[in-house]
Length: 60
Image (cartoon, rainbow, N blue to C red; front, side, top):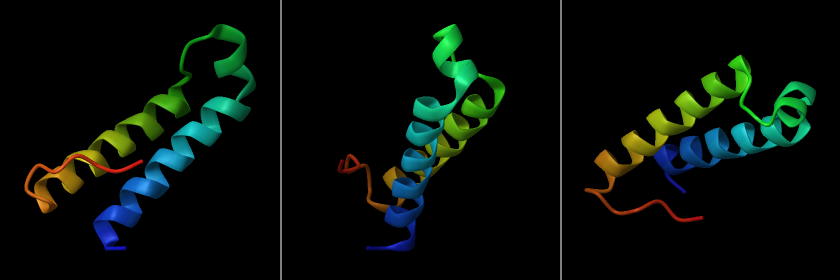
């Protein structure tokens, strides 16, 4: 797995785990400020992955 793939997988996992375990995210049904930062990190990693692979969609 390349560094770009690993960064994408880690960012996605971090975001998903936060949303599942965050009391505020679950109670409000909306992303809290921390979840938004994790989502932004995931989107940046996804964008980097697309650049590195020439536009191939990420797996998973």
